[in-house]
Length: 45
Image (cartoon, rainbow, N blue to C red; front, side, top):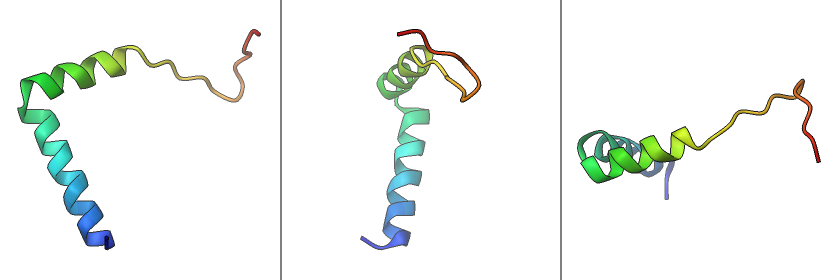
């Protein structure tokens, strides 16, 4: 795949995630379950 093909696939995926209700809900759920851990944050073991 060329870079242009990769960009086209990404844009199509992005478009589908905005218009398809099931994908939109899945993205929202996945985003809600994420946590950003910065380098300065301490992580307990």
